[in-house]
Figure 1 (cartoon, rainbow, N blue to C red):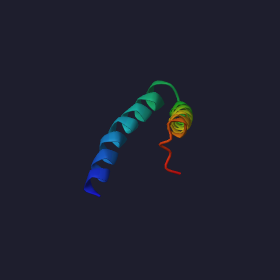
Figure 2 (figure 1 turned 60 degrees about the vertical axis):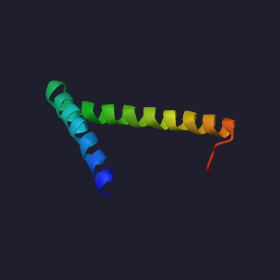
Figure 3 (figure 1 turned 90 degrees about the vertical axis):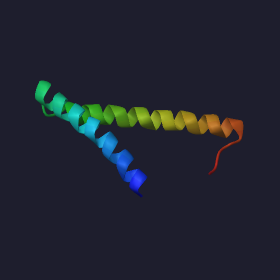
Length: 61
């Protein structure tokens, strides 16, 4: 539980800094667009890794 919270904290700090910088530099909508783009990218990568694991026979579903 401690390791999970430590990793979460280390990733939330850069995310907040990037979101704040985008908000201050551009406008209040850009951080949400950036979050949407990164979520879409992570879903795409997750799909690719799933397909690759399924092809190699290492899928755990």
